[in-house]
Image (cartoon, rainbow, N blue to C red):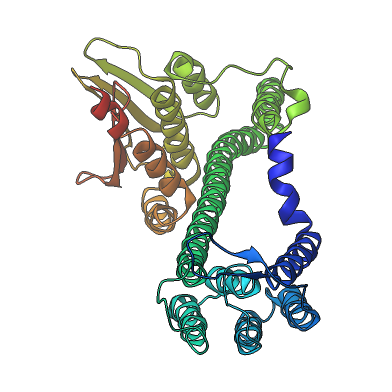
Length: 415
């Protein structure tokens, strides 16, 4: 209830202006009946209300209705009206020149120029004070002149307080808008990072399974006439490969659908599924060897997925580009790192033709999304990746991943 009443004057500013104008006109007209004889008893009623003072104060009060739009002009008009009342033989005081003080507050509050906000009220107050000496010089410090000085000071103080409060609220509003924009930018950044993560997952899934499907289909077509039984077995494996691809695609794309958030999804792959991954490549005719050095230790979920996807992508590149029949996967566990190496011997069906094709294709792939995606995955979990030809032939991808999640600045500060 209190908050609503505090907002009422701002919502009904015109009503407030009309009430102030009427009140000031009534006070100025009543003050025209008063006179101070200087006997220390204060002003007393000695004459009837002046219609001239009423007309002048009404003019000043009407001018106040435009104080927000034309604060300088309103201050000039109200100050002149106060001087005219003095010229008619009435003492200038807080009552007879009240409209001028309201105009001083208005120009101090609404003016955008700080110099104007301070200088104009001082000039208007000085003009009223000087005009008060035209007919009544003695005594110097009368009640009316004291109220004039007090009115200028009070108007300036109220204007300064109102301007400070307005600037403070504007700063709060700007800070709130900045915070809102920052939250929106952070949300967009998170969405972009999530899209990039899902794009990497889709790339790895599609590249892996399409490479296997292509190899199995080619082998089945080659064996169809001479060895139909083995061709049928390869076609069965092809159906299993495409089914696995569909399941992984459904699990990944399902993350984008809120309606399917309760549906059971495939578990996130990791090194626990490494044997199944190697078996799927061996079915295409690729000979694989796996060596593990050190004591296997669990990885963080992100590093575990990264290790799996890097091995998957590296073997997919071997299948697509190397023209080789053999590859080696090495896992080396140290105290803080897991080093993964995937290499091939560079041999194949046609040594010269295969090596030439591999050189050109591997160079283009190193600039493509395969190696870029693997490197980004490694960096995202605090590791790094190297890829290149081996001196004795073939190609090798080496990755070093931390066994523990990388420490963030927040964690370091808290520790």
